[in-house]
Amino acid sequence: MGAGELSGRDVLTRSVKGQTRRVALGSALGSVHQLGEALVPVLIGVVIDQAVAGRNAGRLALWLGVLAVMYVTLSWSFRLGAKAGERSAEEAAHTLRLAIVGRVLDARGGAEEGRLPGELANVATEDAKRVGAVNMALMAGIWAFAGVAVSAVALLLTSVTLGLIVLLGTPVLLWLGHLLSKPLERRSEAEQDKAAHASGVAADLVAGLRVLKGLGAQDAAVERYRRTSRISLAATLRSARAASWQTGLVLALTGGFIALITLVGGRLALNGSMTLGQLVSAVGLALFLLGPLETFAWVNAELAQGRASAARVAEVLATGHAVVDGDDPVTEPVRGELRLRGVRLGGLDGVDLDLPAGRLTGIAVTDPAGAEALLRCLGRETDPESGSVELDGVPLTRLDPAGLRAAVLVAAHDAALFDGSMAANVTPEDDSEGGEAGLLTKRAMAAARADEVAGSLPHGTATGVGEGGRSLSGGQRQRVLLARALRAGPPVLVVHDPTTAVDTVTEARIASGLREFRQGRTTIVVTNSPALLAVTDHVILLDAGRVGAEGTHADLVRTDATYRTAVLA
Image 1 (cartoon, rainbow, N blue to C red):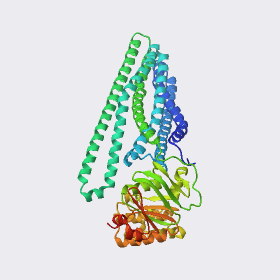
Image 2: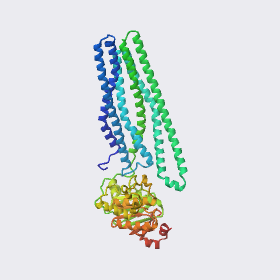
Image 3: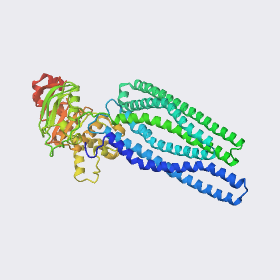
Image 4: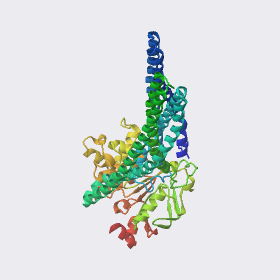
């Protein structure tokens, strides 16, 4: 694991430690606020007994001054406590989002297996937000507990009976609230699962809209999303019903509890066990308790939803890696020699390949599954079921995956462009000032004939390409993608079908530009395009998962019928 990488558990631990001080500060400030809120009815009772009943103007002014100071304290403690709580919640959610994105982008892969991109986006946004909100909920729970504790002590000093009712009744209410939150937790988890799936289906639908229209299948795709959306809506409604029942029942229990306190306080006042001021204080404290007890109900609901979302976040962070973690750095300089021995995976059946450094090699296939498996092995998205892949004599399993990604770039034909300008998609660097970096970018774009694409756009390379490059045609996207791969300049470049959507004339020019740009560096072109294979130094045919023939393109076209069928048919 690199110095900049953290496991999901490490990130969560760091998040908890980083938020502890803020949570403690917010809890302390909130508790001060609750203390002041609970003391307000007590002070009012004192004012009634000592100033109003005794008609003492001096004491009245004194206690009114105390009340004024109390309200100023209440205002500032609440504002500062709420600020600390909200900031803690947002920072916790932000840390989780970074952890989830880091896990998804981990060079060892695995997090995306079995999950649609929209599902992962939902976990990184909605679930992370709900888990972050637990910080605020915990602080609010501490505030509410402080309010109940202060009220109970004040009532004990006023009346032992009322104090005992609060002390004994509050734990029972909390226990009942916890039981009532269980259905909400289960239905909240189901709601998030269905919502995440609906988001994933929607993202796939939008991404493939142009293709769906071309096939005339948009109606079927929309109907699929409509069914998924209805299922998500039903789950959301079930969760909302559970939340409403939980809130309603807890409020009913809380109201009954407050009514009991008021009733007992009234009877004590009638038989002379309490003064008028004490009765006012007791009723005021009983009414004040509505706030903390309602907060407990809200905290229970937030924790229920937070637990459900935390389980989903933890599932992503704890997903096993697709490949084992190597520790050895890639040896510099990278010569770029690749070797496969007995590789079995998907469409590959014990493949042995020698791909010398500095050579432009073409690989043609009779089965697309073989090409897909080969690309996954070379890009180390998956380790072979058996056999080994080596870079400069070192097995890929021993190399640090992040370092390997920098040395061997696999440019898939279906890679995505990012929302932004064409220039930003070709290189993340700001090379607008020219110099060596700017010259390299221009050469890469010229080799891929992406400069012609820029010339057809209204603002040249500054033109936005839209999300996924949707504002470009298929051929234009392919040329921009190839320019990006060439501009990256890795020691080993593997490109897969980079010209399937361009015309034959442009394809021939791209083939020539690719050879010239990558001269002297290891380049592998996995394609059945005659134009691209014609400019390679050596061609290998994978037939039925094994090496079927080797040689130059011209020789294989002349001597191998299987190759002719695969490439020229």
